[in-house]
Image (cartoon, rainbow, N blue to C red):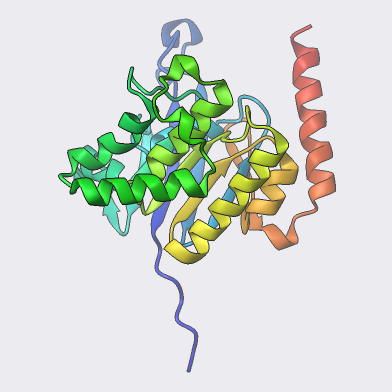
Length: 260
């Protein structure tokens, strides 16, 4: 029997994003380019590592996929349906974004984890089961449950924000530098949890991460952004990770020199 090609889950077609700041001064009605001609497809259960130097457009890309912004031009589709035809609330139930600096909105950890499930009208038993499961999976200490965000470290807030996204069981999980404030042991464990999530829960994950060694462990595929353009889109097995790390370090160093 012939292998059946996987169905496209997410598709971006010639997506451009321009800032509207200082357009008159720049003499450009579109403004400064943040993302330019971005096109790629995402398939179920993929684990996509997104890398690139500071200012490459990585976070902007995730925000567009979560519809926290609209592209200047181009098209984004989820399972063949254009984004603007999907109600935002429904879209964000399917596509969850965890930003680098996430807030608990004054709630305790336990309240923050239960809140999105309560909004869906789930039973208290189901809510408790899901919250308990992800607390255990992510090794969140039980004494955190009564704490608010001001009583947590930056890494603690990151971990809780990830758990809050996972309890809603999204189709696509978008992570922006999820390990930036975590110690190496916690970060490595998180990678194991995410790999297991994709493999067993059929969740597709796109993760921005500047820690190349973690991106290498996590990803089945690599997207490399630079100056708002997609420089490379390839299987992780074909990536020269040593050269990639050196290239990113060199690009960052050159950018730093330009500011001196």
